[in-house]
Length: 110
Length: 111
Image 1 (spheres, rainbow over the protein chains, first blue to last red):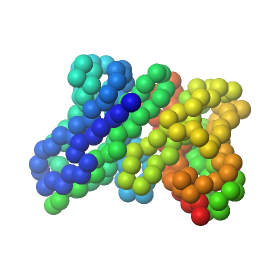
Image 2: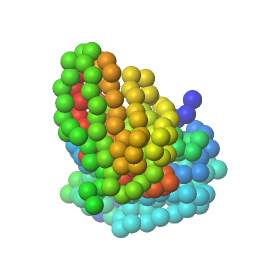
Image 3: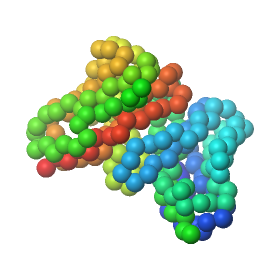
């Protein structure tokens, strides 16, 4: 069975702190995506990781991919309130089958 | 560019009714997708299309149908609505399945 697991599911962190969200997947894939969703809103694409060892950074967010371990991480540096949202990873199988994780709900506390 | 647009934004259906959710993109993307998102969950792929005239099933296609007669439009049809289809439906498009752009969603309730 194909699985995409994220942890933690809920994360409450103080402003200025660092933290990492983990995304594990069960079957080999060559593409992994990270998205952000604000409450009641649609999804916003953050990163597309296309190869083993890929690392991408945008502002306080950095994503990496280890295809051998079937693991991606989303690292948050010096969190600010504006980063409060739900973050999803998604993995692509057999060309175009997207499978999403259940999401990590992040709350940044002043 | 309007990007990906979806109509309607909200809809309430009675059990057994039918409806079509509309999705249009103006970015000339070849790939289009339909997802559903249940409360507190991630998205599940219903159907996708890699170009006009070509569609394929995703993870949860039962109870839905799609068509892709043009590059721009990818409607999702619910034939006999059931309470289990209460969800938020998102359409997305991409060029060659790299970065996806999502529509604003349709919130559907089946009573």
